[in-house]
Image (tube, rainbow, N blue to C red; front, side, top):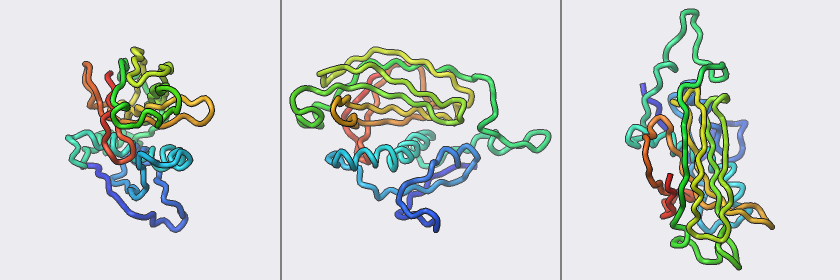
Length: 227
């Protein structure tokens, strides 16, 4: 059996009046075959800061998870349902995401540097008077026991920030744990600006050094993060 995603243009639930998305991980952790998403939200690069904040924290997060979930299996749009989601125990019990279990995998992530913003944005996009102050946020999602978040230090006044920091995450169900990476620009006077994001299926990560492209909304941008 395979899980797949479906795109939709409006929310059909009679009790749900907004175009925001449901939390997909809850459905996936219980073996849902399909989770539908709204895709009509505009995540343009030049979105007003107040609109950007709402979109990125509300509508955007579910779509980021969808992108990460379905990067696996070659990005074909289908992901094989995990065996433990289709089997029952000796007493008929099914998988419980909230149950305690032993750590199966320890993930170590070292972030080296980022580049590309200077090519995609004007010199005054993030800060009128100086280069941007970037930092990186990492989040592990999945079963409640695995949820974790870390962030790097802020590198001030640099379009090509070098962080060179390592973070460690302990995972009990790595098969259901996407790694969400988000770059923010620190702003002392207002809310931090969004600089790009990527979501990766941990089950398919390999040991080594690589660079990843970041997304802002639905468009692929040239920002790259080396880790």
